[in-house]
Picture 1 (tube, rainbow, N blue to C red):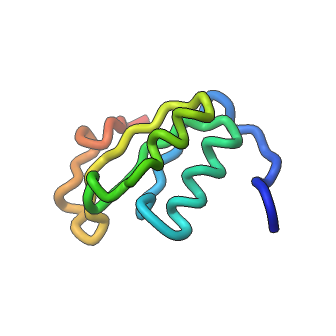
Picture 2: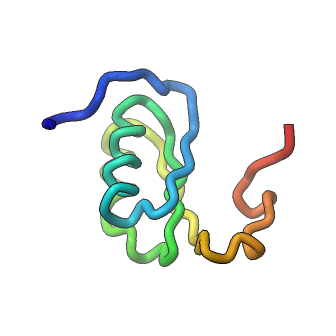
Length: 85
């Protein structure tokens, strides 16, 4: 399949874990293409390459966040900028 699927996420924010490579990278770009701003969950924030720049070039915001999802106890809700609803 070439290109991105067609759906609209304008005004939404997505958090993608494993965004540095593979599926996480592709999903991050697809969500940005659909209009979402993307928080990039990365084990090593330096490993993101130019992904944030690619997302910003689409007119979206990108926020690289260093997080190791194998250790959820190290990620209190406040660090990720989330809040209870």
